[in-house]
Amino acid sequence: MNRTLSLFAMMAVSICLGLSGVGRTSQLMPLPAREEMRLQLGIADRAWIQEERSLTLVRGRNDIRVDWEGVEIDPDSVSLEILERKKEVRVIDSTGSSRNPTAATWQIYSELAGNVDARYSYVVGGLSSRMQYRIIVDEDETHADLEAHLLVTNGTGMDIPLCRCTAANDITFSLELAEGESRSIPLFDRTGLALTRQFVLDSRQSGSDVVLSYHVFPSAKDVAAGWFLPGVARVYRRTTQGELVFLGEDRIDELASDSGLELAVGRAGDVVVKRTQLHYEQSVEAENDRGVTQLLSTREAYQVDVSNYTEDSIDLTVLQDIPGPWAMLESSPAMWETRSAHLIAYKIKVPAGKTEIVSYRIQRGPLLPRERVQPLMP
Image (cartoon, rainbow, N blue to C red; front, top):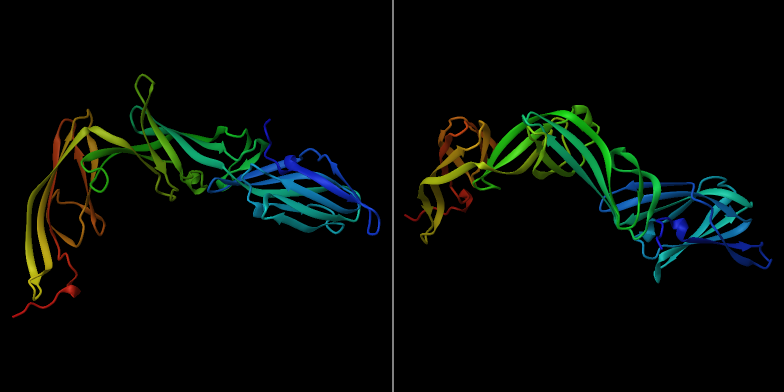
């Protein structure tokens, strides 16, 4: 039989009847129907749940015991709050047991008999949420449509009844999910977003493979509102026949207000790269008294041939990592930019069916810090 993710569905109220000095009897009473349930998705596959019910209390002491065996509830997070008549109704004690970490008991003292609204809250594990984006590039590769979904998977050990659910950045929707079930929740969609196509050759990651990427530019208003949360983006291209072709997927990180979405979708097989080392020489600048090299510099020359076998001209960014201290001696093209202390970038255009060449000559070194150099012996 399915079990519902609700502390109240696993709860019995034990009411102790009578005042001090009078014999007490204890009885179990059915709980009233749930009035409201709210769920807030958190990080690390955890969620905070709040349930509101109307408790039927007697005058005097009322004991409430909660059991959640088989459900990933953090026992330290379980709490009970009386929402009305707080002067007449008080939670006087709550107890748990290390021998039974899946149960807790509250003692409520009431100066009156009747119904009182209460809220139970607790943190439950096993409820994962993942952002997923579907991006469709038009046939001209100048614009894109975007759909955003939240994939929620219930691994808590209980069913989740229909409730109001809140995700990050106050995204709110209705959710009902059986144990072991996943559901994709549509959040928003955008059409006609500006798009640029990019080809990148990065020596740090792809070696001699050119990676095709797209830069999608959502509105500044959407980005500032925090709509784009980290998640996986799957990219498709619409053909002239109207069919969709899957290009690849990449991960979206949180965006700065002016950055947009940069999505590397995979290897561009029609762009071929050949890397060649043209020259390499070493020079010793200093040795210690044992003849061990203390300063060493090198002069190196490299050439990168890029052949474009596509039907269109492409814009290519060539990223080259240069370890250690270095200086540029000669470069073609003459224009290049420094991205970091050890990374330079060339931007070139490669016509369809043509080959373009990037070449550079550098000096690297000294490769050991000068403070470690011992003076040469006379």
